[in-house]
Image 1 (cartoon, rainbow, N blue to C red):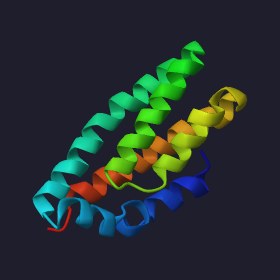
Image 2 (cartoon, rainbow, N blue to C red; image 1 turned 30 degrees about the vertical axis):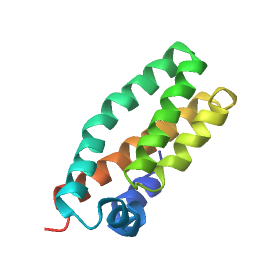
Image 3 (spheres, rainbow, N blue to C red; image 1 turned 180 degrees about the vertical axis):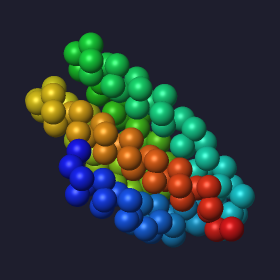
Image 4 (cartoon, helix red, strand yellow; image 1 turned 120 degrees about the vertical axis):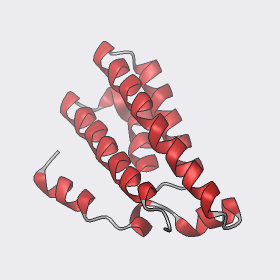
Length: 125
């Protein structure tokens, strides 16, 4: 991942990464429930990303696509933006991308999850 990408991710606002109106609608404005959703998401994502990486390292594209699909769905459920699009690309085209592209996409996912973690720690306090 380029330094420019890393800088861009560090400058993302909450609204650029979390669909706040959708999260409000999903939770009927319950801030504690929103915190719980985001906390569960950031707790579960490292395991999902590890499994995605392991499937890639083994060249198991069926399992890789399954884990990418799981990341996409969990992100959409938690009203997280940007991550579903990257995960969908990996799900649909993972085996067609070169190793560098896949590793860069996984690194982007990790950085974005880190940003969601940052936002969730101070969620509407």
